[in-house]
Image (tube, helix red, strand yellow):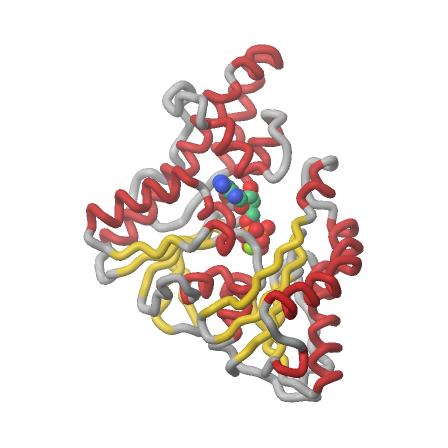
Length: 330
Ligand SMILES: Nc1ncnc2c1ncn2[C@@H]1O[C@H](COP(=O)(O)OP(=O)(O)OP(=O)(O)O)[C@@H](O)[C@H]1O
Ligand SMILES: [Mg+2]
């Protein structure tokens, strides 16, 4: 499959990309973040309706930006799970229609494989084996990537995802949505040591994560301060919270490296766009003499280039075998 048209609509970004080998010829993301901001989070029904309006223009822009058209792509790839079912359905139905109308194969992709496969993309593609820390709005996991098309989970969150915790913290602090970038901005002016937050599962050698206690700690801190003092101390609260989230992520990455056997690490998922996490992971990997692949921020948050990248190593389904294919929430 030389040239792939990839489509991603699992959450609130409408995305399409054209891939040629490990190079994205185009990568179009139409974010719905502003649409959902007024609700303080993503409203699934609103997301699916907006995907419906955006999907065709976004695909057109990706084909045009990639200097190609539908006739000249070899396959259509699409995220089939996990995600918001109504949102996924828009992408899957569109991909099936485009592929069927042109008799091309369809490649179903798992969104998480996409976040891992962002590391296979240019610039400086990383090849397995490597350890991937995938941190997004719905997932937090350490993945052992030993081949392009699969990974094993070495540790994962037992409750909230890191991105979800950042989004909830931002909402509590009145910083808007999406929360991760807002916390990062606010934290720049704050002292990360001003509000010590609990570090979950800091003892033992486990690789699982937990963020719900951190959220509760912030709720108590805000409750003790009251609304006015919370506003005054907002930068300090954001910095302390970000420090605790990043601290836990890097502590578990360090533990995984302590077990040995890894010469390369990749960060992926929306939270991997976080500057403090990138800085701490860079320092850790330099200390260990391990290569670190820092996926560019625009390939960390949801995009279709990563879906096309995963599709290169997944099984295509020839027409008409995919006509009964369905999306799945998990
Ligand atoms: N600079 C940043 N710092 C911290 N968090 C960030 C940053 N940029 C984005 N995020 C967070 O990344 C998350 C979105 O990531 P992504 O788009 O990969 O998640 P998702 O697709 O909603 O979830 P999943 O991939 O698990 O299905 C949000 O929680 C957002 O707050
Ligand atoms: Mg994602």
